[in-house]
Length: 436
Image (cartoon, rainbow, N blue to C red; front, side):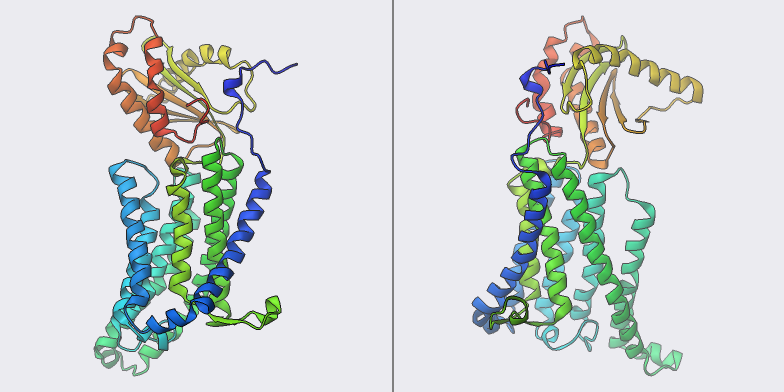
């Protein structure tokens, strides 16, 4: 049968295969990290070497990351964009790390990780990485799910705890010998350093896993993108995570890299960790700066939004976003509203509950519900997530507050609610641009 759907609900079509976009972005991130390492370590090597033992060496990465943290806080708190809280914590931890490096000075240039002597700020710098990695994991996890996977969250959290508590213990041991005297263990500080070094390698594997996990989620946002902006933002994040992997490999080799074995060029350069990490954060930041809609993106299909007047089961407003697996959408809208109201009533009856139904789950669909006054907003999607729930909650609240009088004195005229597209654009900006 010929597709008779109107052109305004056509799907977003990728101009290039999402898989090809992913591999291209991944390679850009990997080779981009090598390119930046060469630029900072060789092309700009003389300049960076000249300022390496001055506060300026860490001041520039600190200023950049602190500015990006302020921007993310502004977006999350002032503009009310949910889902950026953990990403801002990640950037804050990196920013504090650079600040501690700046205060610690040349100690960081001459000692291995966790062998910091008596420099407290150098040890605090090492303790920031577990906090940063945990926050980055939580940010990616909440893009895909309502809550972090408990087992994975415990694993990530447990991998960072020894480094955090070990760092605190090392600070205590470096500042006083009371513990060594009480425990009659003169070599306790050295033992703590050895244990921390061992856990540092384990934690490095978690960093690698989180980067791969982030790549998988961002590939999902790319495949299910409903607009060019979401596709572009996904690509920036893929470049960012693959850049993290590239930096991880560079750090795992050694401080000075000889490119002759890789590219047959007689070149060598020094890896400037802070500057490479600064570049990675900037790339991730571009996903949210150049494509603000990406802050609301999800790695699965979101099909339809329906606003129902529960008093009589009438559809006040409906928007179809994704038409795959959808047939005769106009007829479905008329049938869905009373059916959903009936399901809500039935669930209360059979469970003897007075609470509000927020989620109806099926094998291949999730029905998210949020209520305000006599209005219930229904979002039909492939899955549910923290970002979708928060968006639906804000949308329902603002829709009801704007049309409270029309809803409470409803006469059957649903045309008045067509002006709510700006609310939809505010809370679900990843919906198809041609219809918004």
